[in-house]
View 1 (cartoon, rainbow, N blue to C red):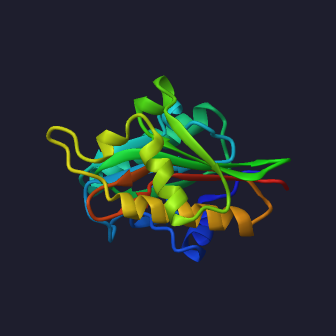
View 2 (cartoon, rainbow, N blue to C red):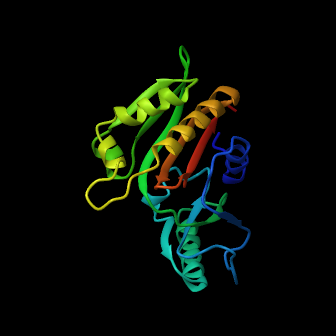
Length: 210
């Protein structure tokens, strides 16, 4: 069973895992928001696995009008696909390097932690490192340096470096969550955005054994 964004958010907070400022909307029309622009709107539904493929992620929203227009478009897509179990998630935009982190629970070894570059890199290059939990900070740092694209995270040409210490800390927190929450079979943090100051989980998916 896939956890809702509300349930995922509670678990992330429990393990001190940072996300951009996020609101779960109770309406398909809003008159105001406490978020900073630009914002991102996405749909949370157990019936939707790949939101982007269905056109249910809207980025670069710079006004209430943009948000309401995107809400209307999303509603139309959901109705077209006869999806009824959903909510809208509005989030501040995070900027930096895209990476992925995840966990799959292996029957023999337990939680296996995965790290790699995000965006097109994960689809095309499949450049990832893996470790069996629990992770130490040193093991997490090794995972980051092990991938072929590690140099990109150090700052390449005109790009600023990612804070690798924050990334390693986030991997350790993911490991801790995976060890303690034994009912969770799979975790997908995609993407995680890392810049010079922080590493935040922009989108998180969790699958339980129930």
